[in-house]
Length: 208
Image (cartoon, rainbow, N blue to C red; front, side):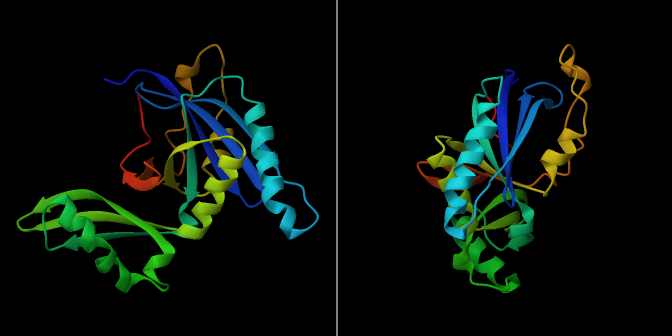
């Protein structure tokens, strides 16, 4: 049984930053707040600072105090593949997954942060859901958040537009139990949890 807590999910959509605060720990996630801010700049070299300011503006509108922030990484820039690895044991499978995934890529494996979730073990094989996200993009977005004073506890691979979907769900502040983002287009993909500075995939958004 998980205790109820609030999590803020941050989504970058071009020059727009969206923040959705949800309450988790109950039967369904409940939408509490959604805000967005757009970065304004005149030259490409000003974009980073403008996005930092946009994050500041969006976070500054929050009325609640989230227990954790999560970065929503668009699956547009990710590779997702189910793989069968002829090995068992997490350490051995972890070493094999990048090599098993590489033949399906149109770019170098080094361009991705890769991890996996075990789906099943059958005989001497392990079936995994492997996910690789563009390293350069994640590094940039995490750097923007860090510059804005926001520490992302996890990175969640999620379909683009999840914040927009959540925004279409009415929020009744007197009775949140009737509102959820359960039908948002999240694709139920693994998450990359930041542990000692190194992203590692986990099946769900961290809960406390």
